[in-house]
Length: 266
Image (cartoon, rainbow, N blue to C red; front, side, top):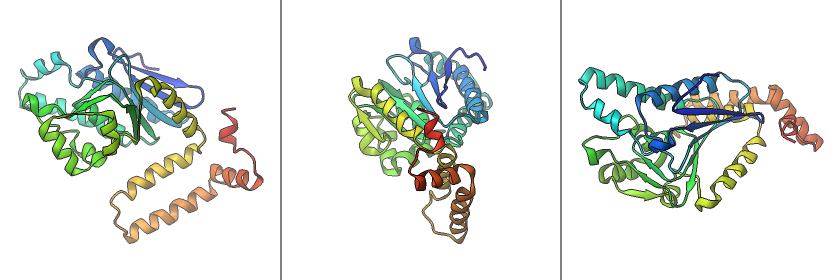
């Protein structure tokens, strides 16, 4: 496994990974090194067929305070071409997280500013502390949430994205739940226990079926009922029914026993 200095990738023997933002002394602020290491860590996760899902977390008090001050100061000295290369690297990170084949769950505490909202939005699900503080802060410093904007709009809708992107208001974890950015929010002291509950729930499910369902929901995201989408859904369920896990799940259900992927967690 690759050694990292700004992130940490832990793999649980039960079959999932936790990718930690690991600059607690800098409030897990982004810089070029962290972006590159996150991309490499996601490549590792994508290639590991033993993993069922991914947790994305931040070490310390905050999920991520956004862009690192020193990195922004350096960016201010670069020309357009160099800044374009930087933005493309950030976009690559967001797109790789968004298109990760296994389900992803962000766990948010403390501050989540700027690009951190992009990471949260790129995950399939997110939970967080009620008192977490989130902000699309870019306009306060003369910038815009450009690279992350497609994912934020998908997560909370265009109207809410306009509001928070234009005002740079802070909003709480409880508000993030109301907006749909968080699936659930919890008292800060209960967040870790809630993470364990989510892990337990996800481990009940067929790994292959979760991946197939993730791909299915992406295919159906527009909600437009085209002939091509109908064929995709018909083929999807037929493939699952004849797959090894599909056969095992159906037999276990009919035999009133535990399927093999749950027995592995006992």
